Amino acid sequence: MNILIHIAFFKKNLFSFLLIGLIILSSSCNKNDNEIELLGFEESPTVLEVEVENVVCGSGVFGSLWFYGGVIRLGGVKYYFRPYQLSEQAAQKLERGVIEGTKLKVSFKTIQEDGQYDSIPICARFIGTNVPIYIFDVEYL
Image 1 (cartoon, rainbow, N blue to C red):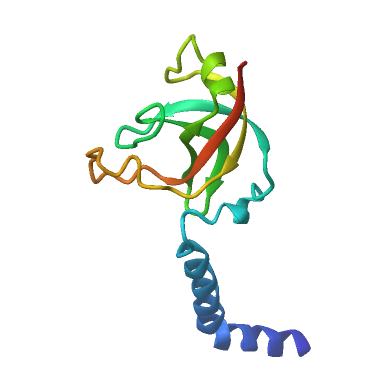
Image 2 (tube, rainbow, N blue to C red):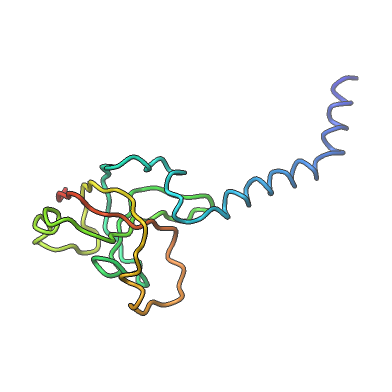
């Protein structure tokens, strides 16, 4: 008899449970894209193995070539690390260049955008969540 009461309670409140779940999910989706601390990269510097991907509509040190570190956000949206500034040491180590598919080990910290790429025209295509980074050091894998 107790089990029937629990089933009836669940059926009666199913809509409420679903609504609460949707509210929780939507609130996590509406976070600011630059809230990198949600992913645990708030410590500086961070070292991560990444693959260079062409995001087509992006801008940064390497144009539309950004770094993907295997992090996926809710809904299957990729989380990109946008090369925004580069140390001299990292620039020297990247003399071979950066092309799509290159695998790198990157030492970086997250930074705030300063508007240096604002004048570059970009298209309206959604390219995924991203955070600008300052690259201290890099090595090819």
